[in-house]
Length: 66
Image 1 (tube, rainbow, N blue to C red):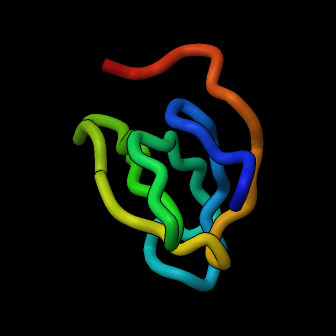
Image 2: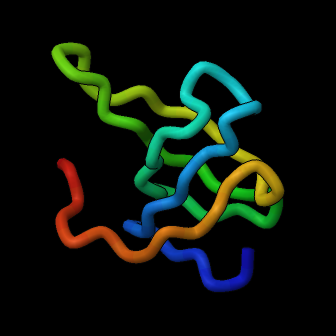
């Protein structure tokens, strides 16, 4: 994914894992995809990695969660 940057939001392929369909905020861009997190209500952040072919670009995040 050529246009991906830190703080961007991507949607995870629904067939990938239990977070499929969720929006992930990108914290690191890698050649193979990205690392980032999904906010889990009352739990915090769930960090994981997603391959380029398993996500779709949404756009830049307005706010970055700390």
